[in-house]
Image (cartoon, rainbow, N blue to C red; front, side, top):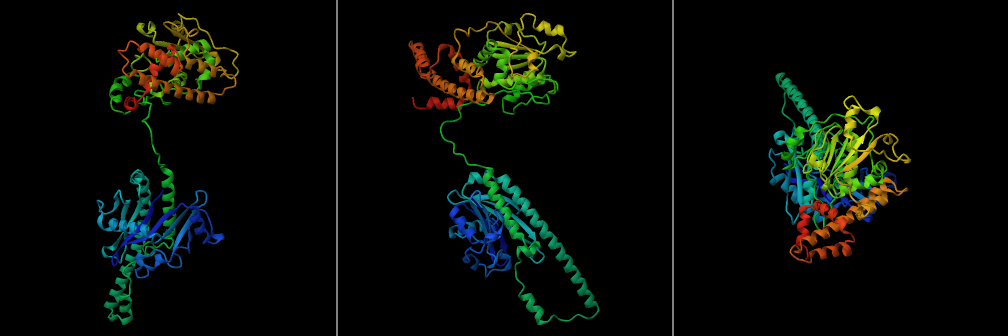
Length: 570
């Protein structure tokens, strides 16, 4: 983190002053020079060591100050921690070595203790200017039995040029500064309480002496001691901790290192994100509940829907899961898989019906990877049918019948799952399951697959729709490539997933070209059909059978990206 962390103090005699500061040096050459000044037997990574190489010029201004304005001595002018892996040295001293940084830090110190006021006079606040620097200041008090009002004012300040980074780091920095302040205040309170008790004991002893008639005027030596008593007390004396600045150095190093690793600046260039955010998604959690987004418009439209859903709490015992497209391809066989995949790719409503919630949910999770995420509107499992405008991926319980308009529609596809007879419970009698599949002939998956889960081989699967597609003659190009990947004997699931991800990216680029073409004013042009065919054939390298998929995927483009395409160079 490119910042300077400093402890500041308001002295009763000298005003605001910089007491202790830590900064990072990223130059490997400078770090090596600093490390050369430390004996080899004392070099430890990220461990505080006194540094004798720091300029003594910074100490000259402290000789006239009181003890309360000092943190280091000439014999121990600072501390160094060296991160050999990152080649960064963290140096702590009373003042920065660079005069320009000293002026910036001094100005921030004065504003922190004199000008900028936090509600309650103790707490965090941010101030600064865009042409200079920005400061996070956290003021606090430490108890002191010898100070006016029995307390002294301190502040931690973090100075950096990046205002956005400072604001984003606010929760992290304030939390840890507050922890350090609590530790200092706790130590100072112990010392303060002890000194107060000693003062009371001294007063009681003086009263006893006066009552006995043994009281005498103080001598010149005692008066000289009072006159020479310093107006300020060091932080070491206030807290009773001789290693308080060593601990503070280590704490500042942690804040600089962890703060820099916590947030990474990312320069965003180019057009807005092409993919839209999914509007509706109702995934089923492990506990059997539904997660619903809080975005405006979604919550209102789903209140009635969610209240009608009746989910049962399920476990994953004896419920096999489908983990990949290749596994589903092997279970269904090529013909049924191509029919199901084609319906998914072109945006039909996909209904998966089965008795086991986790099996149904896992199949839907695999199928939704065939299309862009923003095209997926999911109800993972339901006890009643939901219309296609609510979701395009629907999981249904066994025995739920479909409306007539769904059975007769060419824009719906049904995948039925029939478990083995020994897994059918009392609530799923065999005659009910038989009635569900009475109209169809059930064909099981190929029994020669070696890598398929043996338990799933006992299940029966069936794909049905109003009118099967003629994929033998006109098969979309993206489906051909997908089948080629899945039929490869030596292709792993990870390789197939990565390859199809790249294939989806390629087709999204075709979608952008098609969208741009559709908005270029060809609607009334009689040559539009001819130009569209030429675009598909010569530019996009696809056929008319691919057009339904491209048009459906166009809904995945975000509104911002559509606006960008319309206003880009025509």
